[in-house]
Length: 200
Image (cartoon, rainbow, N blue to C red; front, side):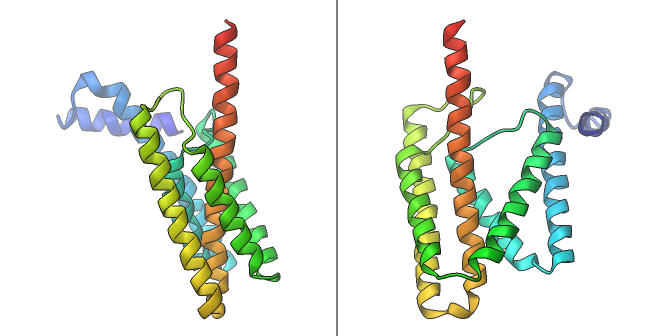
């Protein structure tokens, strides 16, 4: 479905002479990713409206996407498995939100510090198709730690001064933790692939 749709879009763009024939493969891949992302995000937002968690879900997605943009993470092998992985991640968020909302605020602070420490130590996760230079690694590490620090600081201040919006703080913190766990899985995945390549 994703490939079919992306091919149709690219074909239309070629007919309108907006792109060159030489770049067909690149454009098809980019549109596949775009369509996959739109479908996944749309499914989450529709579910969030049905469940009455729209604002919390938007905060979770914003936190997750912003951190993962810099720290990298796990990549599914197909668009379908990416969709299911995204939905599992979202249900993890919902379960964590329901759980954390009933317990002590200190758990959130501990989770944030844990995520920040791991990002400082391990970010970013590399991808075999997009290797990073030493400077790029330092930049991604710095940016992911910076974003995590902002989330941690806001979370601490809100917990202290505005406990009535604790639910939204939880959403941002779960997004941070989820991106951190994805980064760890990405590093494991990359290490396994690297070890297999070295054995050949």
